[in-house]
Image 1: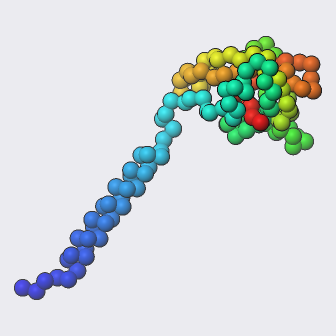
Image 2: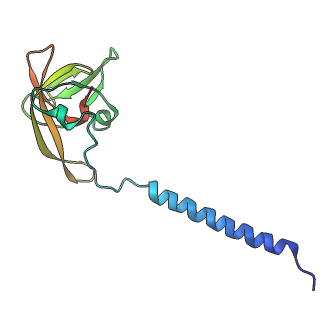
Image 3: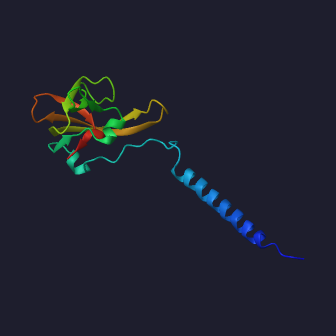
Amino acid sequence: MIANPFHKSMIWNSWLALLLLCAFIALLVACGGNNEEPTPTTALVSAEQLTEGSQIRVVCSQSCKERAQCGTRQDGSEVVLMSRGGPAVDNHDMVILSGTAVTVQESRAQDVREVSSQIQFPVTFLRVLAENQAEEGWVTQWCLGQ
């Protein structure tokens, strides 16, 4: 009986293909899906900078944009949305230019609910006084930086 030289390479190629398929599936499982519970993104500033009297800046960061808490005006300038009446992630009644220096007046953790998943999680809101304004407003931790 004559041995088929291609038989061993075909078996090897089948095992290699199966191994690569398993690795690809494992990669998809590890990286895939947004089925995780939402959690507050790591603040762009440290906890020490969020204390009363601290000077920080409001910024239209990627995290702030992803949560629809800032945007770009027709003139191209970026603004951060704020609320005069208290912590809020919608129905804002105030805007401030991104990059504006502010002084923290108060910090408050409050639960918010993600609309798409209905999952609730805590977010830190800060009442800040703008360097160039006489008004105070509330802004989320997602929109603060240096």
